[in-house]
Image (cartoon, rainbow, N blue to C red; front, side, top):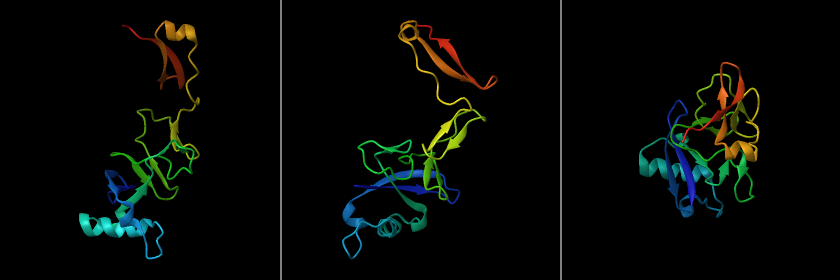
Length: 144
């Protein structure tokens, strides 16, 4: 199955759709995004240039099955299409300090990823949360 994202003129993902591979094959028998786009335009009354192929198996710049990553992330409703970088971006976390990391197709904090939890922290039901005021990760205890 081929997967496509229906996007708005503002590059916002509105919907995702699957398409039988036979509807994406050109006259030479090769899979073609433009053939799939034309099919989707004809059958969904939405301009072909606003259907962008996506990979179900790609997340954070990695192909889950070891293949070649395609377009950063599998598109989801509310994601944004970045045509310059050929990436579907998740919505930005609620932290203005976080920025886009092109190689991982992910939003990152100024301090990088949260530190690893120790076994003791996990036992104490602790986890890390981002603190925008201090631009750092803080330890928080879950209250059961």
